[in-house]
Image 1: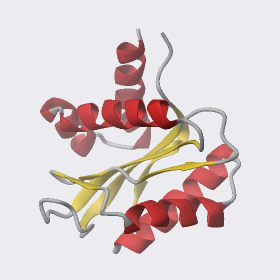
Image 2: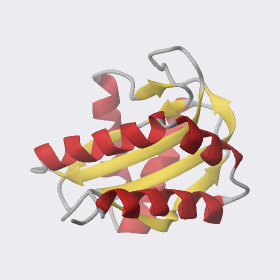
Image 3: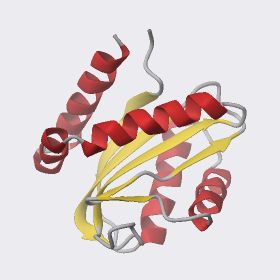
Image 4: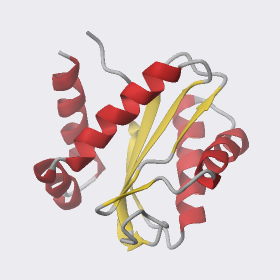
Length: 153
């Protein structure tokens, strides 16, 4: 079995942002740079989804996501924020971990399965603590890819 989504090491970052729009903009720029997508189109799709309801998951985690054309499989990006940021989360807690997901337009079930996998990963207390305390982006990537690969096996 293969992983439900892929994440490039360059899409795992420690980011400084002060507002939710700054986070979404940085996420769109990251997806665009790493996966060769149009940043304006990525931002438009993420913002469209966000208008349906905040993707602030709770417990300091947001999972902005969207489906869009131009992709052949789901791709992810992960940010640990330098400081927590208000994100209109379900529990009103600011977020410091942001896990972005983009899936192909027609990937209905696959998109939902990838979201569920990310949700499970982000609910894991030990993983959450490790992500918050990881020293840098390389350590964050190592933590994430280890779990993604393990869960795909």
